[in-house]
Image (tube, rainbow, N blue to C red; front, side, top):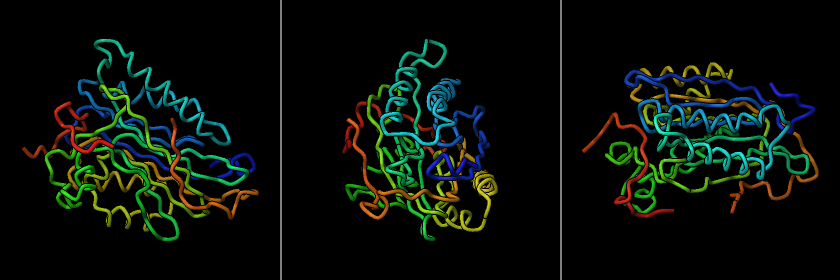
Amino acid sequence: MTDAAASPISVLCGAATDRGLRRRVNEDAYVAASPVFLVADGMGGHHAGEIASAAVIDEFAHLAGRPSVSIDELQAAFRRARRRVATLPEGAGAGAGTTLSGVAIADLEGDGYWLTMNVGDSRTYRMSGGILEQISIDHSVVQELIDRGELDAAQATRDARRNVITRAIGAGSDAEPDYWLIPAEEGDRILVCSDGLSGELTWERIDAVLREEAHPQAAATRLVHEAMLHGGRDNITALVVDALSVGAGDGRGTGRDTQPVHPDDDDVDGDTRPRQPHLTGGGR
């Protein structure tokens, strides 16, 4: 739990991860140390994805222990992480990539905010006031098809292209993450997960577990366990972060809506992979 006197959001966090039932290596990595709560899902195989995700998380782990993080600090960590992945040597991760999603605690004039970032198809959800919403937007081919009205959500879960992502750190991508600033409220519950979780459990099942398990560690452990029971076809990681108290400064009450922040054949067991050059439709 964070020091409420030092951080604008006092939190309690739970984390769980598993390589799943069909993978030999867990290519997921995460940091869950206030003020940063992030999940990276590596891709590349033969341990390369594991190296890429670990390198990225290591850069963001340097932010742990601070009361809060600014957008400039988060972007600087992202740039360092991208350079590390780009310079991985042959035989030790060269050409690999990773997704990244999650939240950091931000302080705006004494108000506590969730500073959310996402690149790829790992996901960040928020349960607030009894309502679960997905904050992040998948950077994937099927999400582009959904946005264009060519697929619905049910079709997307069966589409052969659902593991193809359009943004990543490494793997030939130089895309930037999406960022959002979301005003925190006491009682918020944040879920950050790799697609090994969201690909196995329905929205309704995720919602039910988050409601039924009071402690964030129990919720994270159960989500991973249920994803295993539903097939466990990929690596699975879940972070659950509860806001126990939220600081209120002079900025509270104005501009409290979620705000985007702008910085400059069916392969059911398919691993996350970057979009190849011939898959060019509908880029963001």
